[in-house]
Length: 398
Figure 1 (cartoon, rainbow, N blue to C red):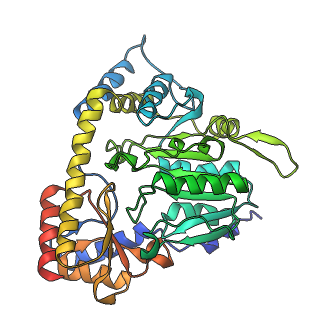
Figure 2: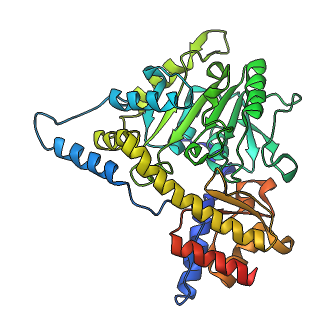
Figure 3: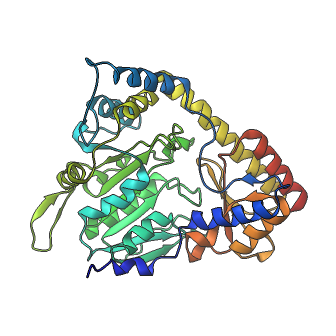
């Protein structure tokens, strides 16, 4: 008899965004005449920038020539991409060693896979509302999970509670789904909490490129002491439109060490390297050359133009909501708008209302946790014409 992992029985039957997709598909089939504007899943709509495409084409051509063909590459990523990222972090005032960087196929994968290096006895602290991957991957391991509530009172940026003891802490800034971003002073409190409790912060910085306010940190390693208590996960999905190309990176500092239950000190960097070399074959050479191009001066210029496009989309949606007197968070320093459902509607009730009356798809806040009930997430990743039309629909019907 092959026993299965019973922890899967504790999961919801389907992933949040699968539920949304099924509802939209059913509505489209029943109303083929209606134009639907999709502001739900955070998938980009602008193509890869020219310098990235050129690098990808050049790398693909290299793979067709014997002298430049590449087979298996290093599981942790090619040195040329490491060097590009080391220089990128210098722009934040952060110094990294090449060996602290691990290239992956995206932050979502690493958010789930990083749990392999931690014992299942650890207590997990996650924000609520929360990106479902943080929660579900730990439910799959049967770990104890405690929640820290995000609310209007704390700006959807929960802070440490000395009475709550946790071992692994998930933070995301700018936050998905709320769009809120931690200040340096707030992250200092989290780093102090982690160091005091011997905890490890898993810091999701997937949206750092959207930060405009120079007072806000782009990396947790801008905080003194963070290298001794934090792992940073990042992605090129939104930074450079790699949602279909798949490339991200995780930084595991050499200074980060923790003990086993029997007291043996272990380097988390070496543990993650061992995990990756065992279970991962690396990101394709072609994709890594494309990623390298993102961090060139021309690549940064072109990618920032795309980011500016999405930021303007967020501004347009926010302006429409503001005109209607609707409370929302995010929209600046973030591609997400976290709006309060009008007329005291529940999140899924408002989802149905938006779809049926306005032909707009968003994501119900309750799908991100109980503290998301009564809230709703919109994204800024649609095309400009669709975003402008959505803003007008909000103005007319809300």
